[in-house]
Each structure stands twice: as C-alpha cells, then as structure tokens.
Image 1: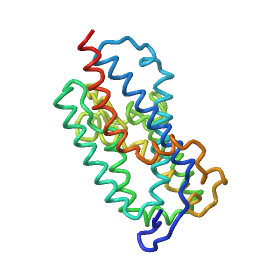
Image 2: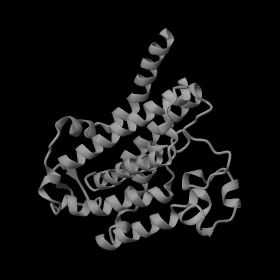
Image 3: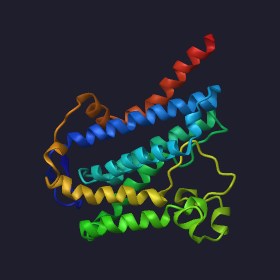
Length: 257
C-alpha cells in the first residue's frame, strides 16, 4: 500500500488487517441499522429498539468508530482531497435518489457527506494539523469533541442543557446544518455534522501516526477474520449498494404479503 503523510514523501506501509476487520464490522452494523430503519419507517414493522435511547448511543459509538478508523486511513492515502470529493459526490447522488423515492426522509448531511468533507479538509490542511505533536493533537481533539458535542442541542458543551446556551439565530438560518446548527423543523434520515464529529475523525488521523510507523501492537497488522477484512476493504461499495438491494428485497417480500 502506497501512502504519504505530508503530500511530499511517498512511502510503503504495512496494511493494518485489524483495522480492516473493525471497519468491516462497523459497516455491517450500519447495514443492520438501516435495514431496521427501513422496516420501521417504510413498512410499519414495529421495532421498539429503534426508539430506545441506549440504541442511539450504540449507533453513535459504531459511527464514531467508523469515522475514527477513516481518520487513521487518511495517513495511508496519497490524495485525501480527491478521495473526499469522490465520497462527497456519491453522498450527493444518494441524497438526490432519496429525495425522489423518499421525500419525507431526506439525507441532508449523512455519513458520506461528512466523510467526504472531512477528507477534503484533512487533505487541504494536513500540513498544519501535523505540526501539532501527536499526543497533544489527540488531547485537543478530545477536548473539542466534548466542547462541541451539545451544539446540535443548542449548547456549547458536552450535552443538552450542559454548558453555554448558544444564540438562537445560529439555528434559524437553515444554512449551518453541516456544522450542527439545526432548527426544530430539520429532518434528515442520516445526519452527522462536522461539529463534533470532525474531531473524532481528526483524532484518528493523529493515531494514524503510530499506525504508519509500526508503533501499534502486532495484532493490529494481522488479519484474523478474513470475511470482515474483505468487508472493511469495500466499505464504500457496501454502503452504496446495500440500500438499493434491501429496498428491492423488501419490495418483493411485501408485495406478496
């Protein structure tokens, strides 16, 4: 695998098999979540777990793990800006498709939009990010994540009602939703704003410093469960194709019922 850390020098790095496996597991969990979402909201199948608060936490943990791993992967890439543009454009295609087939549940800034913009931001500004020492960068990301975690709920702080209440005009423009400033009428079937999630992505990029320099434990570079590793190497294709496949299967099943 060829990669570069500063857009100047190119070096070969060992592939991290464990990273592929975790990424594969995360994308499969995301597929299961989307299938349950479709069954609940498109076909009226009662799935109480979809409304349990703990399930939302589990969903965010897996999504955050996916973002973190993608941040690590950026350290292996030679052109993150190009990867980001590709990812964002695919996200926009999915947005337009959903607007046609499911206008009541649009996707306005989903995981692919987030990943695309994050990759582009890192690809443009990596030389500045990497001037910060790795451990300091990770600590800064943790602090900023906690500081911006409540932005979606109107607060500069870790959660709703904790921290400094932000001015209401930030949430009334309708234009700042990519940053997490959303109004009461905002609806998106898949939504991961840059604040606070970009700091999870960026923390992964800092951890990637250890990965590309063989400073991670030995198991990190080995493949233990090959099917998961394969899924991890084709996450984008799985993400793009799983919804059309699931919708086709559901159409055939529920048409006969």
